[in-house]
Length: 75
Length: 465
Image 1: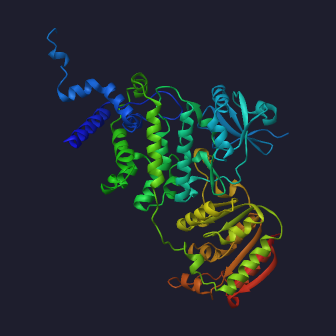
Image 2 (image 1 turned 90 degrees about the vertical axis):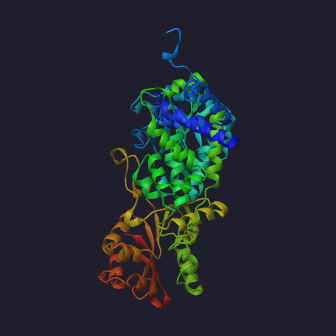
Image 3 (image 1 turned 60 degrees about the vertical axis):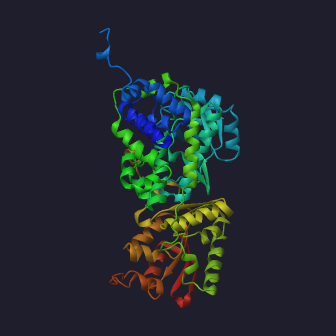
């Protein structure tokens, strides 16, 4: 069960990455956004924590746990 | 008065530029690079790795000694580097050489990160060789790590080190032709297309190849992930984690090829003990004639004669077309020396050309230092009969090098040449002993001649006219 959960989590990380990666602005060598995002996943626990931090809202959205703007009762 | 000459292959990083002045090698630094250098020279890792010979010997140079004022561009300072005896490129290295160069790159990065520095790129062209020892040459690659920045060189490391190694280790594909054809290396998508599903279970493939290729394909070019990473707190430990993981992946890569056409030549050639002794004596006598600056052993195989030459030459470049033979030669040199032989993979009939921007970024083989001694033992029958190079043209080329020559003629009566001609029509009328000797005599003065195998092979030692 834990294994399945881990795989799902990894899948979610990757899908969020595929949706969000972008290109940087500095340095003579373009690190390429896809490779930068991958470095988060390959950065151990600390890297995964950053992914969660960066994409928390997206992840919640994927789980259906985040209300969209149109669902806001105040709107 | 000479003027400084820019190294044409060192233009990519605007912060530093290699140049030559009065036979010495310098690196001009921008203001920013000079500040990095001042920090770098205070670090423990830099001093240690330079002492160990893993970073090229480097010292600050007086601007006047370096001719810096005469150099175009706005430069803050100059460094002087020890000269690399013979420049070579990754497409001339064997598998184990590229792997050791990759491990050096990762080792330096790991050590630099511990003291707050990073390597801003990861080009395999930043590694050169002192014999069989890899040396990192681009000291301007070291910069202070800025908090929140990822490792900008990760993709370059994959394209120029990891993917070529994976293709050879997992697919038995030679990386040299690809690297020679693509100065920036192998893109993730191309590597991914070659490695199959089964390979994705192997270390490095699922993440560094497949996932990276997918992420590149999906990249959104309108957003700056870099600034987002800074805000989210990209930490140094994450780079260290990745670098140490890569070290494990690369360290375990092995090329499992055990046989090739020429790798077992030294054990399986047609020489019996007596003839081998005569040949070794002849070569030994020729190479010990004087001290040589640079010797080329062409068709060096696993380097038996390179080692003889190395006793009397400052440096020996041992070239062979057979990748496995060169890999074995390299591993032998690494384990037992001597330290002044550089083994390279290369085919004289298709020698390394000038490549890159304006054809000047990477130099052709012959432009990187002329030899004063050339060994061409059991070689020319392959060039004339297998590669169809006319004998007079081959002799012209050898004479053009302007060096002494130890050459072996393997005649048509020899079993090796008979084998080459077995399925070919013999149109090689120029490949006969009298024609060879006349041609050699026109271009060289023959100092010694020695027949072997009852005259089916002949050795010559000659000097240029």
